[in-house]
Image (cartoon, rainbow, N blue to C red; front, side):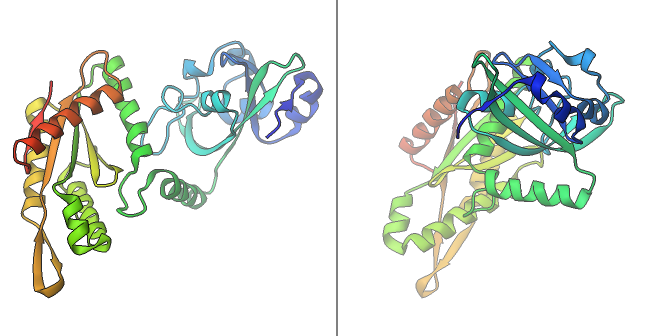
Length: 304
C-alpha cells in the first residue's frame, strides 16, 4: 500500500471538522497533532499532549483483558514497524477517570519531507452491544485457536509480554508451564488424525478448567500447550502442573471397538527471573519438558 503524503497544515480544516478523534505521531512516537474531536472525546487539550510521546501512557489504552496497549502492543509502534494499518477495539482513559470503549485505526503516512508519520483515528463506541460484537469477532479471529477454542500462540505471546512487563516494573512474579502429549505420533499413526485432534481438544479443555481464571492456557502449536501462571511461587507453579498432569492421566478417549485410549502429558516449567524474555523462559521450560520425556514421561520438571 502506498504511503499517504501528509501535510498537517493543509488538512487542518478537515481534521477540525470531523467527529473522529485524530492525532499524529512522528517516527519517535512524539505527538505532533491533536484535533478538537480528540480533545472532546478524551478531555485532554491539544496543549497538554502535543510534543509528549504516546508511550507516556496518556490515554492508558487497555484491551478487554487488561493489557496496557500503550506499553505492550502499541498499534502505532506496530504500524511504524511494518507499514501495515491496524484496526482494533480498546478502552481509553478519559481525563475525568472514566473508561471509554473506542474503535482505533492507525495508518502510516509521510510528511512533506518524506518523514514517516502515523495517523491514529479513533471514535467512541456508544453502543455496548456493538462493542461486544466487535470484541468477540476480534477474539475469535486473532486470539483463538480454531481447533480447541483456547488462546492461540499469538494470544500467549501478547499475554506473556504483558506478564514480563509487570514482572519488570511491578515485581509481580509469574511462571510458565509447557507440556505436550506423550507419544502423540503413535496416537496419530494408530488411530488417525481425527482421534489425534480429539486428544488435543481433550487436553485443552482439561487444562483450561484446571487453572484459575487469571491463568492463561494456550495452544503453542501442534500438540504443545503453554500455561502462564501469575502471582505464584515455584511450589504453586509445580502444583498447577501436577494438577493438569494428573487430570489428563485419569482421562481417556473412547475409540473403535469400545477401547479406551489413555493419554498422558509431559511438562516443563520455570519461574520468571530478572533479564528474562519470553524466548528465554520458553527455552528453560522446553528443557524441563525434555527432561520429563527422557525420564519416563507423564511427569513435570521445573527448571531454574
